[in-house]
Amino acid sequence: MENISVRRLANLLLALAVLLGVFAACQKKTETAAAPASPTPAKATPAADTPGASSAYSAAVPPPITGPVTPALVSQGADSITQYLHFPKDPESALANGAVQFYCDITEEGTVTATQALIGSTDAFRNAVQTALDWGRFTPATIDQKSVPVYLGGTVLFLHENGEEVIVVSLTTDRDRVRRMTNYIQPQLIGGLRPMMERAISSLPPDNNDVSGKAEVMVTIDEHGALTATSKISESPKGSGLGTLLENALKSAQFTPAYENAKPASGTINVVADFDQF
Image (cartoon, rainbow, N blue to C red; front, top):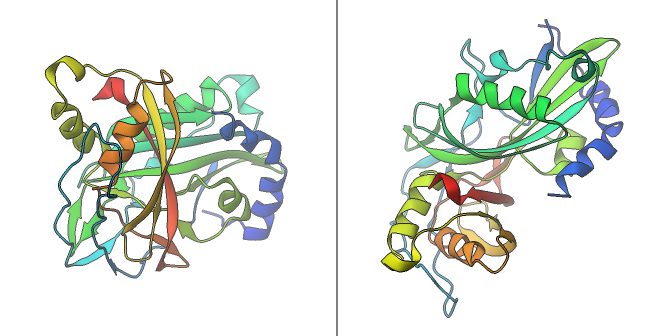
């Protein structure tokens, strides 16, 4: 496969600044961006509950992670999601540029078990990404060299260069980092979102555990994988308390750190939850 220079990709990404604004409001060639092949393992530590926080659910703090941690990566094998990524077949979409953010749970084998959200420019591009997530796989995350499930986010860019189709995959939803093509992987939620939220919902009173809707919470993780801050971004229906439920559950979660230039770093991840899937 022909390599595409970072400078050439950066020029293409600058042209997509308006297109990427859609995220704020809510052979082709396949390249993998921001996914170092061998990130330096980091040791993660659990986050503590915030004293005095309002709580519809408060899980126990998990035990410390004692082994080295590595994040899930975009696989380079024949079963990688990149092998299933294709431009939409309809003529109009095939000639357009597109961008899609995805948020999903993956198993310890690297397969996707649930897609929590797809945020993109058109249905055609969102469907193209969902197909790849349904059929492809990631390289699993590991703790102490043992594969573990995680919840992760990423971005797929569908571009054209000199009349050729180019697809770029990045394991971050940070628009600025995607635009600049930095060597960066955002934090990932160890154990996956769905099991964590199913436990949270099951702990609610029987007359209050029939939840439906969506919520989004931003979490900040330090270079050791410890949660340092949370911030509710949205919930639907408004006033449903789903944002608080998600935020409180995340305060007892464990994360991989971010990785910048293959080294552990602090970072953020927006956790998007579709409660209709729990």
